Length: 198
Image (cartoon, rainbow, N blue to C red; front, side, top):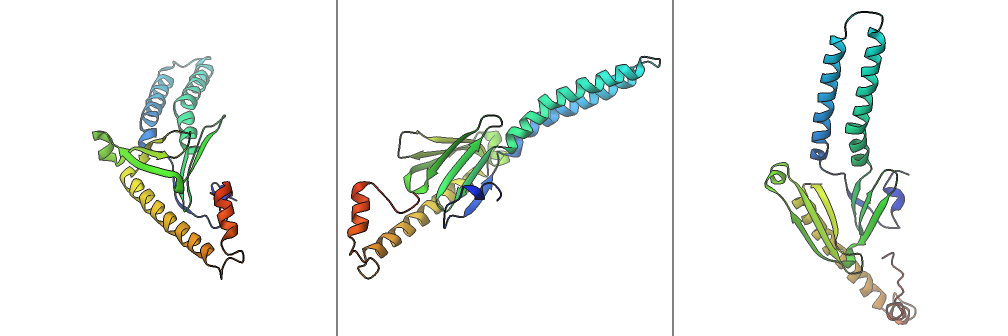
């Protein structure tokens, strides 16, 4: 089962799955190209002789090490950072060796806002801030691609989730649908329990 499908509950669907904006990798790629160019130039300058092969192998090893630090690390961090909007939640996962995650149910979101610098407006990226009920504080997602469109989509999903929950509450209140005449759903609300995933 592919990520993030393995995290979904019943009747939950992925709407959009995002990684940080491609500009996250811009400078690592530029630095890596500089390393490749410099390494190739230095290898060409190694004078002929018995030590030429060993010196070029040393330069190659140094260049590969630099590429691992400058490019492989940022690329792996970019690839393992996930921002997922579903029909019920906003999920955030990041980290390579140690993982960090946060799930925010759409029903608990109180405010959605975004911020863009001038450069980010040119690339249509930005910072998305999601306020929610609870002790976790605001969820801040940086370098989100199409941040304005993502914020609008999140607002739309919240409205759809409100309508869905209102419809489900209406069905539970119908004595024909609820054999307990609404007593069971009222008990769940009063006791803090819920039959819904969130």
